[in-house]
Amino acid sequence: MTLSGAFLGLFYLVVFPGFAFTAVVGLFSSWVERKLSARLQWRVGPPWYQPFADFLKLLGKENVVPQGASRIGFFGAPVVGLAGVTLASTILWMANISPGSIFVGDLIAVIYLLMLPSLGIIIGGSFSRNPFGATGASREVKLMLAYEMPFLIALMTPVVKSGGLISIGALLDFQQGQGWMLGNASCALAFTAALFSSQAKLGLAPFDISEAETELIAGPLVEYSGSALALFKLTKAMLLAVLPILLITIFLGGARTPRTPLTYVLVLGFFIVLKNTNPRVRIDQAMRFFWIPLLALATLGIVLAAVGV
Amino acid sequence: MDIKKWGLKKSPWVFHLNTGACNNCDIEILDCLTPRFDLERFGVQLVTTPRHADVLLVTGPVTRQALPRLKHVYEQVAKPCLVVAVGTCACSCGIFDGSYHVAGPLDKIIPVDVYLPGCPPKPEAIILGVRKALNKL
Image (cartoon, rainbow over all chains, first blue to last red; front, side):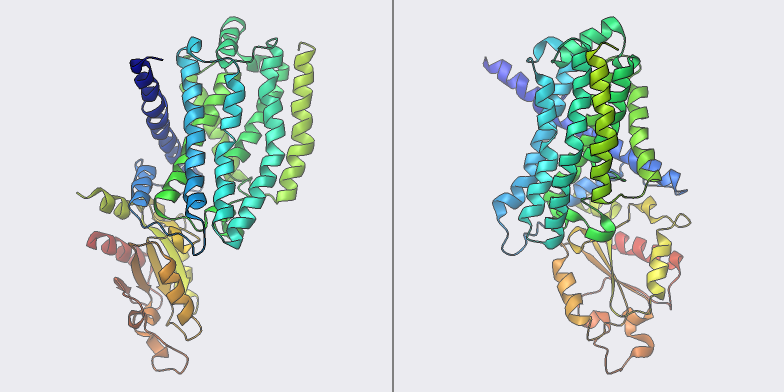
C-alpha cells in the first residue's frame, strides 16, 4: 500500500465514513430516541444538542478507578467496544459507497465486530470489582448467548436466498437487480428476527437486562465515570446508528437508495416504540423468547430460503 | 465560553440521597421528573450510581446512622460536583435541630452549593434552585 493510500484509509476510518461521521449520526439518533420517548410519555424532552452536551461533560469529569481494580482492564474495556463499532461502521459504509473496495466475507467480519461492544461491557463489568458490575456482566453473557444465534441465522438468510453471495457488495448488487430482500417471505421472517435481536444488542428495553436501572443500578457501568463512561455512551450511540444501517443494507436494498432516510427512521422508530411500550423481561424469559419462538422463526426463514421461497 | 462548563451546565446528572428525611422532599424531587415538570428539558437525568452524578441532591437532617454513608457517597461522586440541600431539614435540621440522633445540618459535613428551604420545597422551587446553581458555575 502506498503512503497516500494509507492516509486515505486512515481518513476513511477516522473521519468519513468511519468514526466521526458515525458518532455524529449516532449521537443524533440517540437524541431522537430520547425525544421520541419523552413525547410518548407526554413530556417535552431534551434539546437536540443533549447527547453532545452529555458526551462533552463526561470527557471533562474525573476518572475514578475502584480500589484494587486493574487499570488496564478497566480502561481497556471501553476502547475494545469503541474500536469494534468503529471498524464495523467503516466497513458497512464503505461497502455501500464503493462496493468494489471491500474484501469478500465482509458480512462475517461485521457480525464479529458487532459482538465487540457487548464484549467490552462484559470485560468492563468484570474488571470493576463491584457485585453489581459482575452480575450485570454475567447477565450480558447470557443475553449474548440468547440473541446471537437468531441474529446470525437471520443475517445468513439473504446470503442463502441469493445463492451464496457472502459479501455485502454482492448482496447490494443482487438487490439492485431483483428488488429488496424484504420482498421474499423467507427474508421477511429473517428481518423480524433480526429486528428483535438488534433490540437486545442495543440493550434497550425490554432487553435492558444487564443495565437494569431499578435492580442492578447501572449493571456493568456502575463504577465507570468520566471519559471511560463517555466512551461507553458513545459506543452505544454509534451502535444505534450502525445496526439500522446494517439491517437496511442487508434487507432493504442498501443505504444509497433514495428511500434510505425513511427506512432508517422507520427502523429506529420501531426500536424506540418497542422500548417504550414494554417492561423489562427477566433473563430467563429473554432466553426462552430468543431460543424458542425467535430461533424457530429464523430457522423457518433460512429453510424457506434454501428451498427458494 | 469554557466547553467543559457548558457541558456541565447543559447536562447535570442528579444523584438523590436521603439522609433520614420524612420522604416528603423525596416525593417532590420525583415530581420534578414527571411529565408535568419534566426536568429532562434542561438535560437533568436521575442517575442510579454516584459515579455518574454531577449533582448530589441531599434531603433530610443527616442522622448519625446516615453520616458515614453520606461521607462515603460524597467521596464516590466523580468531581466536579454540586451539592444541593433540599428542604428545611437539610438546610438547618428544621424541627430536629438539637436532637440526640442528628449529626447535621448538611453544611457541617460536606460543602453545600445551594440551599432550598421549604417543608417540602415546591417542584418549581427545586427547578429554580437547580437553575441558579448551574448559573453559578
